[in-house]
Image 1: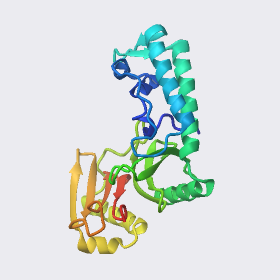
Image 2: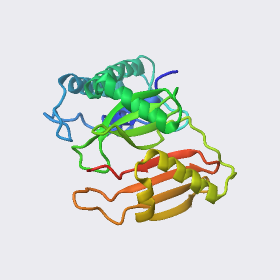
Image 3: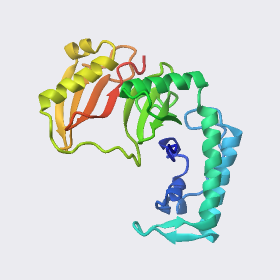
Image 4: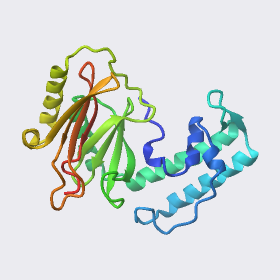
Length: 264
């Protein structure tokens, strides 16, 4: 199975990367080349090879937009690179992806542990899972990193590298996952499935049920949300802990979030 393409870890790298996928490039036209910085935004040391490739990608993009093969996307009407111009930018981008993955990926044993956890979580021992990079933790300060994995259907998994815990997953960009849209189960059975899933995957979930604030709601007529919120952040916690699972109308797990152990 083909490895998933451009991941979210490069979303902030350069707005112009979207042209590789045939999307609009107006943001590139309005951007100047980034200034050289000794460190990344999160305070991590810059990687010379990666920084050089970023600059090369920016330069090549600007050159091809100015003098290369550019056409209009038939659906959006926005300009996109084509022909040899597209091939040149894609080749540089591929090298940048390779170098970034090498710099950010942990040792093979750690990656194997995480993949095993993801497969267990999804109850699919043959699920194809790929490391996609790292990002700032959206729930904590920017210096805390999370790892991003993606399976062959486009579901994305966010992992705390300090514990190997998969604390969130759901469909990623360009996901090929399709969920049932016709109501087949009542809310009581959906709730039971949600609680069963969480009991298997969150140690101490019974205490969460007994002590946290519970809510449930329908989401756009396509799914149900089951959510537990802690009364408030305790001493030493950076965020208010939340556990949430979203099920399709047929009981499929659409997404999952558990911040109960983050920031501890």
